Length: 355
Ligand SMILES: *Cc1c(COP(=O)(O)O)cnc(C)c1O
Image (cartoon, rainbow, N blue to C red; front, top):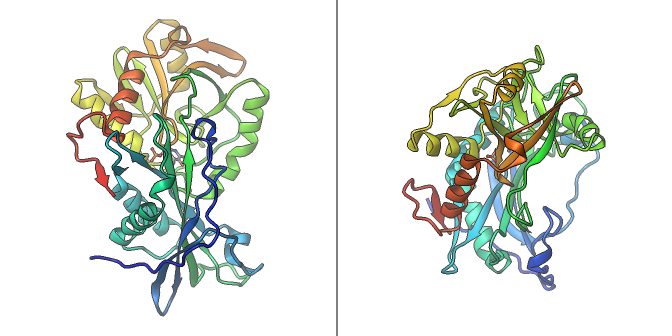
């Protein structure tokens, strides 16, 4: 199906930022995508308009009970100047999985991807060229119906905004120090941990602040029931390489099913590395490290792709992983995934989608 979204032109295009000084998510492009939903019409009136503030009734349900969701992916510019997306169908599928959990109406997955393509195509001059840069794409949906009763809303807004971003690590991959949270929990099985919703993030901020005050850049979350098993690192999925095998938490309700996680598992298995989607006790991680069997810990997500962990702090115990050096698999995965995303390596998986 083809879509033709009307475009309202801006009269005041913005100045593009210096590609050498791009932060994450601070600069937005000239246009945004908007689409409404109501019970009678379904999703309707998809359109591209100049980037601007939005009007929202103070009683809008999202502001009171948090009925909303978001996604995150990137557009990359290849060496030849072409633009491409990385597995956007996965974001579309995950949108509907999140929507179902949050009582937000389903969205046509083809429409979701076409809306992204239409907006990025219009804003192609905003996709930076420098190595390591990309255009971050943030689709999101929120309940606009004004009412204070607690029930699923009947009116929603779907929007997409774009932000040019720089390389997450300015001087190549750099191992970070993480704080293992043994008190507060991010998510529990049966809760909303598998859904990409703002509430999960708000619930994690306090621990993130504590991590920062302890000189750590991120939180390693343990399971919400026993605080025993490693689940996620910050807002990324977590991998542990022990005795040559890679462990990552199973998708059992509290874990966000990352697109990067899925890609990493696929690549590792194709390289002959055993991947175990199993619960892994943090005690066993520390023990394996003492025994010299823990060779790598890394986080995976769209923003950083691969983020190696150099130190872990758990109940006052500090462990240095792989002498705080980047692991072999971490580097190889980073090179393979970013290579495919930017077109530097052949995409034998059919993961990239031209715009
Ligand atoms: C978005 C997200 C991830 C990573 O997902 P990707 O699709 O790889 O970007 C992991 N954990 C949480 C909690 C997330 O919100």
